[in-house]
Length: 81
Image: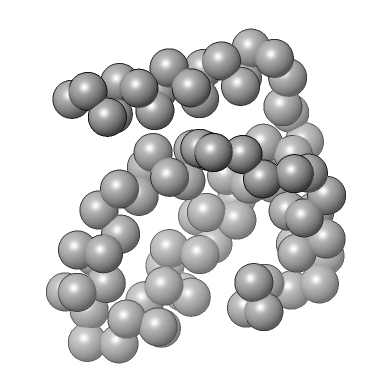
């Protein structure tokens, strides 16, 4: 979390964490991506983290009951796939 700028961190931490989210669904292969990298920390900070941050901010700005249900179903679909 220290890699996020103050404003991004404030937005992300403005909601309680859940058990799943879009970033978890989209980055189930994160370990593989990092294993292939010559510099995993840099890859995470420059490539993965900005995408995850955008998902978190989008959720904070637009979350509602139906988006939560959608995330739950997407998670189940990913797990059962």
